[in-house]
Structures are given as C-alpha cells and as structure tokens.
Length: 111
Picture 1 (cartoon, rainbow, N blue to C red):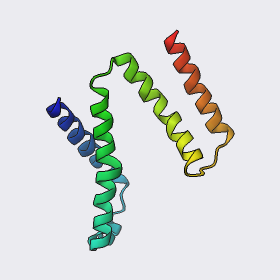
Picture 2: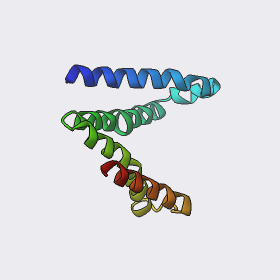
Picture 3: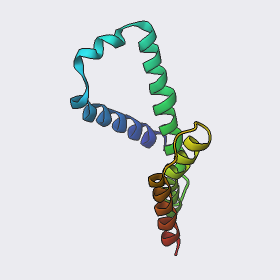
C-alpha cells in the first residue's frame, strides 16, 4: 500500500504542477526567492496540501468502494459547514442548494 500511496501522491502533484504552469505569472517568481516566502511556501505545501492528501488517501484504503464514494461526496458539505461555523464564511442560498443536492444524491445512492 505504501508504494501505491507514494505513486498517487507523486503523480497527482507532478501533474497538477505541470497543469497549472500555463496560468502562472513567471515575472513574479522572483518574489519567492527570499527565505520567509520560501519557508511559507514549503509550509503550506507540506501541511495544507501533501499531508492532508496523504492521510485522506491512506484512510480510504480499507474502505469499501461504496463507502469511499459517499465520504468523497460528503467532503464539500463538511468543508462548507466548517467554513461557515468556524471561519465565519458567508452562507448564501447557492450554498444551501448545493448542500441539499449533495444530501439528496446521497439518499438516492443509498436507495
């Protein structure tokens, strides 16, 4: 399992980096050449991207496919609710409709 996770992590982030390159502003790369910016960039990459993706992928290994699909479906709903309750993000009608669509789709999947 460790090799599969390592391959998934590496391929996901390599292809994601390549895919986003056309949208990057090359002139601003020089802003990252100082120590503080580089440390912040590495910290965000490790703690906010690589480790959560690793733990998420590792956690899905022992699950049945149907349960994993439901967890993946619920993830945006949970993220929206945490953003609203913990971080005070605005909660509008479009988010409510999205949450309702997610809940209805989960119910339909279980039926």
